[in-house]
Every structure is written in structure tokens, then in C-alpha cells.
Length: 94
Image 1 (cartoon, rainbow, N blue to C red):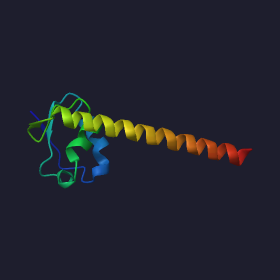
Image 2 (image 1 turned 120 degrees about the horizontal axis):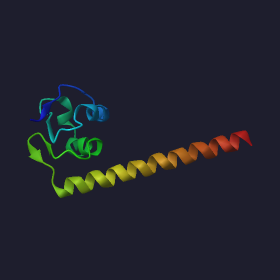
Image 3 (image 1 turned 60 degrees about the horizontal axis):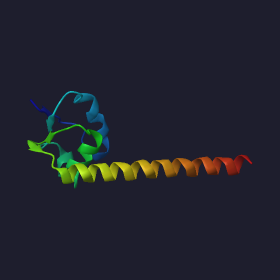
Image 4 (image 1 turned 180 degrees about the vertical axis):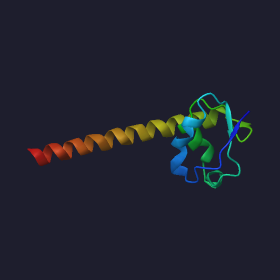
């Protein structure tokens, strides 16, 4: 049975869902304010990669591809930001 979440209420809190759905194949968040955000289905899938269903609808291949592309882009942005911080520190220290 899918789980119903009444929180988190912010789209930035998707990662907090992961601790609740380790073994779940689907969740329901239709009454959660986060469901009103654009692309919330993809954002949830980015946080919960193995999730099969959201709000009683299975994820399709396009959504999975979008989630993978966005997640990879974010990983690259984080890596680039980390390199920038390291270079800045190196320049300050030398």
C-alpha cells in the first residue's frame, strides 16, 4: 500500500521522503502542497530513484529519463562548484 505524506511542505524537502519509503513501490502526495509545484513528479523521482508509482500513476520512461538527466546535471553543477571553491581557497592560501 502506498504511503501518504502530509509533509514535507517545501519542494526542497524531497530528500526527507527517502527515509520513509525504503521498501515502498509507491506513495501518495496529492493533498500535499508540494504536489502543486511544477515537475513535482520528476523531483520526487530524483530523490527516490526506485519509486515505481506516485499518486497512483506509474512513472513512464520519459519521466525516468528526465529525472536521470536533471540529477546528472545537478551532480555536475555540484562538482563544478566544489572545484571552484577549492581553486578559490588555493588562490587565497598561496
